[in-house]
Length: 590
Ligand SMILES: Nc1ncnc2c1ncn2[C@@H]1O[C@H](COP(=O)(O)OP(=O)(O)OP(=O)(O)O)[C@@H](O)[C@H]1O
Ligand SMILES: [Mg+2]
Image (tube, rainbow, N blue to C red; front, side):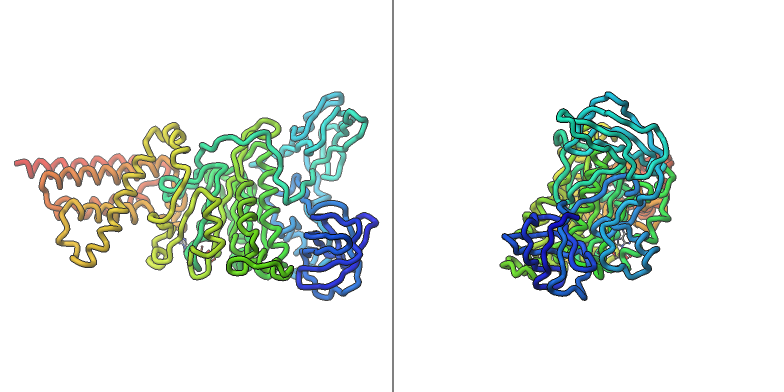
């Protein structure tokens, strides 16, 4: 806190007008009133400021003091972030809950990382070394999955003049002291602070080209998300946004997951809080929480903190990226965040644009998604931040401003469909209206990883589905029976693709996550079935003979019957397909 003070003027929910605020700065963090509520200056003109307050302002009175801190709203970035559950401004919810019960008192200040916990630190620098910003100078095993690399803060460089021995320290301990050219000294601690609204610097942005493996077939094979890429999951009420986000958080092959529960109902977040700690990562057999950080700002929590929660999440993600990790961030839902913007903007009496949202909504969305990327870090490691945002348009109407603007800034659009959800086709991702802009960039990845032209195969399958969609209208008019057999085959194979491949049951042990190799074998088997059927039909064999019910059923069921770690059954299935059509062709040729 500095000596500079102002006074509370008008109070309008989370928005406060301050008077006599000389010396306050734009975007500065302030403490408001006797309770020292946390706030941020969002506009300042001479002595008149507007402050957005992150805590409930009930009981605050005109004339109470506003204290300057001289610093922007910043996060403490250091060990203790993983496995934690924070509110929108990085305050640990569990700790607050243990200390204060369900009702978080106002004015407890900006507590974040545990200051008492001792960490076992390995220090990598020596007296006399030259260090520069972003350099890793110490490491600590934060969890059994993740080594936390402690970096020299941005803006600090110089010669090490003092350094501690390896040992157990708390985060406030000065581990080393660096002296710059001018003789100024900077202590290096286990954490650094960073203003949430400013992207953290990197050495350079690199081209995108690696798949974020999610184990979800419709994503990995049809609408892939690249590491460092951006994706949106728009969907009406109950279509599976949260479920899809959970699946990605649980199974995707990012090193670190940042999950932001933003403005959703408290019980959805409770599910996360109950569910996630029990989950075991199939690749490491360790609890998934060891690589996860949860940020929760549910609908009953202060709206300004919801606005901040997105920035808190992305800043934490960038921080781990800077250590050379691949981070995926899920925000559920960005619509609730946009509503927070709208509410604050309304209270500021700004000129509303479309549907009452502020005119800067597109800019804010763009700035958020632009913080995704695949980069070379300041310490020359590769890292990435992938952003996957859920969007909840009212009534499932994708033409509303948040969905439309989000669409402009993301490269993958996973459109959840009400009809699919009603018919229990999950994930209810509509293959006709969804898209991924990463197919071409991932071509080499697929070829390297799977030695197969996935883009081609996927294009072939999608073409069949588009054809089926066209035929559907025709069938309504004339019925299926009058169609030529080749087209009836399209209908039959589309059914196999939809039920056997695109539908994926998040609650089924084998099906919830499927390795790429099995996904590939599945799609190839379906293609094989199609080609053998097509060849028979071209020879004039009737569809009734070609569509062998047991065989089709076996292909549809392979997702359940073939274990993820033993694909022998797929080969047998393909042999069965060959045996059947070999003998059918032979019978016919006689
Ligand atoms: N992949 C899936 N596998 C099985 N069931 C699913 C799947 N996706 C969604 N569901 C079913 O749909 C229900 C609703 O999903 P979810 O809560 O994710 O929807 P939502 O779009 O987040 O809803 P809301 O608009 O209320 O936030 C789930 O409870 C589940 O029963
Ligand atoms: Mg939801």
